[in-house]
Length: 382
Image 1 (tube, rainbow, N blue to C red):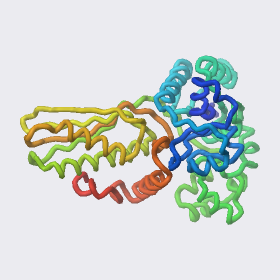
Image 2: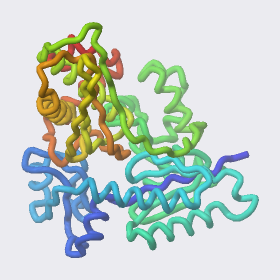
Image 3: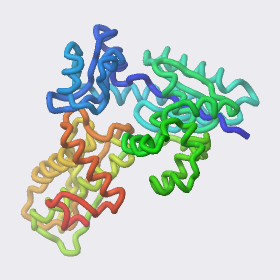
Image 4: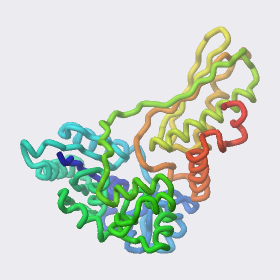
């Protein structure tokens, strides 16, 4: 039986949220992002016509589109609106996966026995727009890959159905840039040997692709041929992530404890980015040698940045550790998580920091989490 998988994506989500609360932003070039040294978090289609793109340095974006209105961004608002959309979908869909703050997969397999899956999807899309005021694009097809590409081809504010018999005719003419997993480096590599369309990629021998990009070559070949058995994973909201360290012998060495906290913050922040979370609350826990336990917490702007989270954690430790008594345990927890594909707090971090974190994450993913780290927390936390 062919599966029926829907991919839904809220159009320019941050921009749409801002326009809901301020109608004066409608129809104008709008950029969501940080200051002069920051980067573009999101931008309207009006700004995109000037060449502005997400993750572009703000200075470059404003040179391309000097008339654009810049808004810092409000993750509290975006999280709230995302939660509202999630609730609307959960009320109706039999199986839903929340892939990011503005992106969803639905498994409607078997529903055509009772009523049309595409008709049902259109009704759900209309309900989302009516109840939230947010524009949404979506596509229905046989698997995640085809439906996601279909959504991309339907934007803005469009929808389509790609039946199994039409998958190859839909995919083949498209640029390989449209495929998930194909970044700029892979595109340039394939382009040099004449692979520029999905159709050409689908006809390549699998062995050649493996030699070019390793094990990902097999996955790309399958997806280019419309093959993707990845399941829709039922959504469950994670509440927090944490780490604790119990000392082998109680300690008053503040330098050691601070180093451990820094290491914990780095490890947890890396986990946030890998699992596509942002956190808004940092909690420090300490336990004295007499087993008295103290905690202190602080709200932060939604982020997954090591330097921000480590700084707040250390400030909390300095405030909570007020007795001249040995410690037997220290712990760090991040709560109030929101699920999103935005790896950094793009409203505050500059382009250089984002590039640094991406490079460090790539090294950790390839060689292990201990392959690189900040010196301040490297020795004690591993």
